Image (spheres, rainbow, N blue to C red):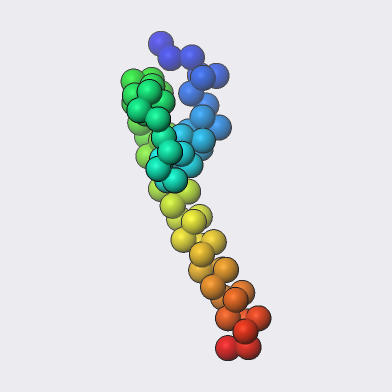
Length: 69
């Protein structure tokens, strides 16, 4: 049974961040897939992608507002 401390939410967030930036090591990726809930990693990845899109939209709106558009 996987240790819940090793596969917590923080681990899923860090793994998703590393994967999004393309710096996830093969060893960590294999560890993530062999232990822990795939649903946790899937939901974390989807949530982080949505937050990224919302962040980009907000930055563009801010830039347009500051530019006077």
